[in-house]
Image (cartoon, rainbow, N blue to C red):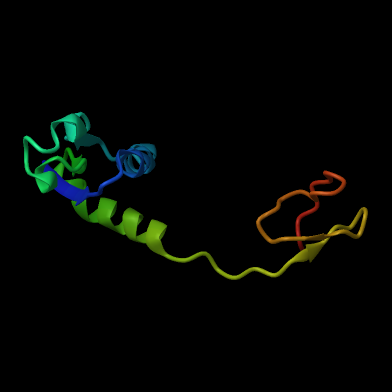
Length: 104
């Protein structure tokens, strides 16, 4: 078992765990309950850690997490084919009329 990453946010570590589990990589979160021990235990020893269960999955897990860190491409706004409303790129359906019109 190898440690993959550490972060101050348990929510973020849990998100990474979910992404890796979805890809079939078994993981374990350590120190999830240690935030209450801050002050009694050094800060860095209380941080949530994400560990990969099988060492052979470590490289693949690192690749997947690196993909998450890449910035999203800049996509153009798109115009709805139904109501002609201009939509931001993150919308898969028109915010105005709700028609699921993907950009061309």
